[in-house]
Image (cartoon, rainbow, N blue to C red; front, side, top):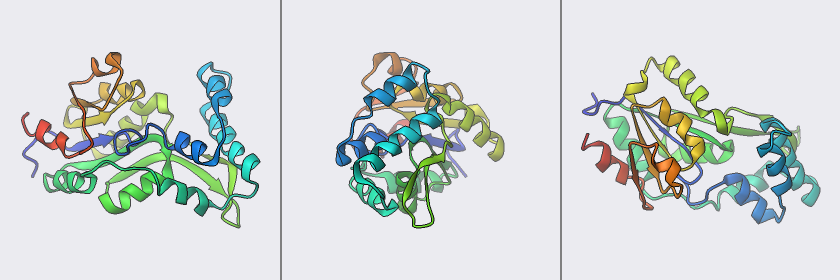
Length: 218
């Protein structure tokens, strides 16, 4: 049984579990494409997040032609991860706390992280493939980055866990929606003071296990 007042720990992925702020941007840089126009259209409400996802994948296909899914997975294997992820998730589970990723990042990276850190659930955005396992400009939006609270609410209802029994960890303003549905929130390596001011606590570092020391003090 948990010694802490929590039953669910929710983590953003990009910038929290990883050392890069965006798994999508990481792939863009490795392939050598610029999605700034697509990003501007999305931020200005000209396209939906689904359109944004499709347009990003289209950039990769336009640059490389037919792209095997394994090629993108190989790039994602290069994403630097925070130290202590597996140890932290193991410690939380020993305390009876379920763990989840809620991220607007790429599902394949969340899946990879979960394979060795054993998250209870992962929610991130999927890229579709054809019969030859090549990527196509389509996917499944499991998480709208601006509406992470919706995903968290569904998860809490599914697990029968209350807001006050949840703590969340994020690094950008997009994670504040999760903070509002959490009894406790941690801004991890966040650089925006307007974001950190909305968190219960903030910390910097490259070892995720730091959060254990913080919540155990509660």
